[in-house]
Image (tube, rainbow, N blue to C red; front, top):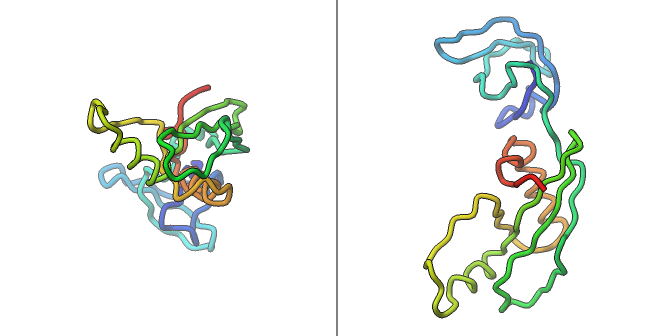
Length: 149
């Protein structure tokens, strides 16, 4: 089985590594494997791809829009991502300030929003964005937070 997310088990599991199954308890949805630290341990099945299909990782990303540090802006920034399976994806980034500014515009309707492919980032600083994308990738949530390009 291939680990798709290590979750809180970073000392025992590595995303993308294939592990030999020692035992499976389907009733409890647990699997016993030999961990990175050499110990045999039980883990929830949702940490693994049961069909041994490869995990898709982030290779690179780039800004699709010019980044402005104007605190009064209301627009989001779009980025494109290249993935390890050769696919390309995209999403929008908002900072908390820009999102607040957007929702405070007069005559905004509806007065709230839900955008599946929106990621809220601390800032448009490259390191902050990379940190969020790496975290989502490690938690196997990046595909769900982006759309095919």
